[in-house]
Image (cartoon, rainbow, N blue to C red):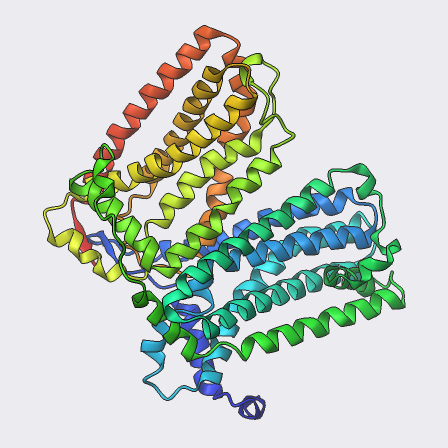
Length: 538
């Protein structure tokens, strides 16, 4: 093994030490302000646990698709497409910390570590997570191929290999595109260019996911065999799908050739991506953080009620500055935003345009998911930052930590949830029978989403940008909050039309939401003051 590493120009001992360090760092206790005496050891593994649980839940969703589709190749193509886009989306959300980190240059560069050794260690650490996620995501579909499609153990192995191979290829493609940007774009433009590409790539991933989900809703497609289409064999996703019948012995020469091509492409993409990660890229990311200069309009937030002074103004200014200079935070936010459009289009034909006050709207669940999901995930993104060490200032100034916590929640409620609800109210007003129906519906849905946000903050109080980020943290939050919001999504479409049809129940609901909001706000202040009473910086 050492000879192979030496032939590739990699120091085996350094590679092993760096890879082990990258993996162990994700399980250690994160830094930042914590209550005195808090160990936090168990919480350090929560992001990885949440990510793996999310992978298994995705596995169940994909398995349902595989179960409904009769043709093996078509079912495998759907599995590979959904798994590949999910993994690519996770990389996009966590790219700035998972693939190349700006801090790597200042830690590794002064030491006798070559760029080849560095990129090999970085790539190995990333591939460990991608492979583990892909294996868990393929377990349930693999059983479905074995039992439902009756293909035996070969299909079980083939489903896992196909998912892992497509995930690794997607990883290599994402790394290749972004490292090329880092190498060619000047530092003063890098943040803006990466943000635009990141937003576009996230949108394309969600659009592809939407096309697959909508396409397989058609019974004709579920009964169709894509292998009969000549042009489909020129699509790389079909090559990965062919691995399942090839391993099961149910495919011919065409499937075997396509499966071999998929494995060759995966190796080639990973090889090309590995050669692009170097310490120079970490330096350029670090330079990009300081290349952007502050802009004008520093006092714009003063005119917004509630954010003109004190802790509220400090938090609003800090969020704006972090979005401008913290690449991890910026890319994480931009990676999530396309999901709101995804849910909107997903619910387009499920009742999202039908007036719920007429009593006929029974669907539209995806739009409720967007309203509940977006504020919570964006608020959770405010908790960690690459600049977490500067959070000592929260404890060294007269600022009230409890007010800072509430201000961060209010910022998300006003600027994110409020803006989204205004847009949705205007959108609904075009299609609903009465404009006031759209306004009242938006207010009630927004109140429910705000209550969920309050509950999330009470359960996990954190000062803004005061926590050291961990690998896969943002991705794990996506999955955990996704399933947390399922309750709201399930109840709202069923109950709201029933309640709106009865004015006394509507009035009672408004009173109940207002009372619950006030009670939770009071509880949030008490929880925050108790939690931060013995806060210390570690």
